[in-house]
Length: 190
Length: 375
Ligand code: SF4
Ligand code: SF4
Image (cartoon, rainbow over all chains, first blue to last red):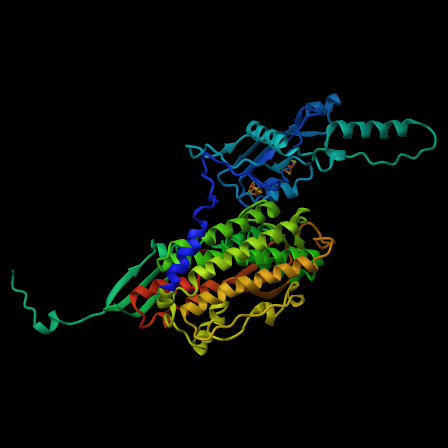
């Protein structure tokens, strides 16, 4: 009897407080800064192309083998507007199989892939969650807008910076005297 | 009526009845089947049937690199993921002979203890619901939700974190981690107290659990019972205390021990452990210093040839990992000693001569997780 009253008392105490549950479809809780949603590809705006060079490391390391990628020679490398020799041609992630582990992000050394905040990608078809390059880049853009992401290794991966650095190194090499610019040029691709 | 002659003796012969419970039964917490042999209202025998959730994690692990295996361990005991990650990473580290930096160890212990809290809160809620009390699960889930939110802000995921890595943790905690955890602990402590007040000494709850499913210490030991369920029978066996690992030796805490080994004791051990975990996390926060969180090592883990057995304390008991390496980047063999699976052995001695109505109470008090039982 006493136990029942105690229980009722505890319940009564919460009766007038605000409920802690959010009603999901109408009300969305904000995601945390580090939230890991579906992986998305990022765009290098300085060269107007994706960061991804199609090196396939993430494809090999993904525990569920849900990604596939194809690269080709980068025409912009020939023009000199990009430092990436190879560039991604096709990229597909089967988001139904993705387990959101974040391993692809850890292994990528080109700042090309990030876990976005996207978590609502339900679809009616079985193949409806196969995200291609366009969709992945869209997701990436949304992610950058929401999180203010910047590449961790800009010197190596952002085309503008890398090209400028390369040009400076070349100029230093041509300049006859003195200052030993032994800076290594970093190369995208492969 | 064609000529079937039935003698009175045959017609009134009493036989034990087989009663199937599960696999789709709300009280089995997953897909688990018990075949009960009942004599009237009494349970004579019970045969657990497992394997409905078998995913072959141990075999799968042989085809994954060490880093990827962590994701499989996340999915063993899916309500205490970080504890599982920790045990595998410790096994791999032992093989490679590396020691994670101290801050990394503190972060691991904080997260593991938070996860233990979340797991026990879930237990308190679901156990109450098994016994027919609707309310406590609301309180349990509310507090668990706060902890999950914390995990989300640290690891990026609410359940499958893949955060504890071989050699440390994935990244340092966010800058506001310490004050946030402190606030969280205060909230959770209030929540645990609330559940405790609501349930522990409630007459109905006592009547359903006191003296039900009693298992004495020798039987418990011979069945391989571990964790809070064993401590309820009166032995203070806790891997954190007896075979210290990580930073547990620097923390001071009690190991709660029960007396009767009945369902109530098994429940109450977990409530008491919640308070211990709270104080442990507070101590960790006080002691933690700045520093690196990841040991210096190659990016791809490649342990030398050898084998190792490492065990640790999970919310459900003593989890062990036996790991054999052949020197490549994939384990040669991974064997898990899952506490839930081993605890299930003691189901039969506990259930013998209990009432059918108590079967659910007894099964619930073991707090099994089927992902771990079936692997
Ligand atoms: S690892 Fe990075 S650069 Fe290489 S294919 Fe994957 S996303 Fe592209
Ligand atoms: S998050 Fe994990 S499962 Fe998903 S694509 Fe990346 S590596 Fe594969």
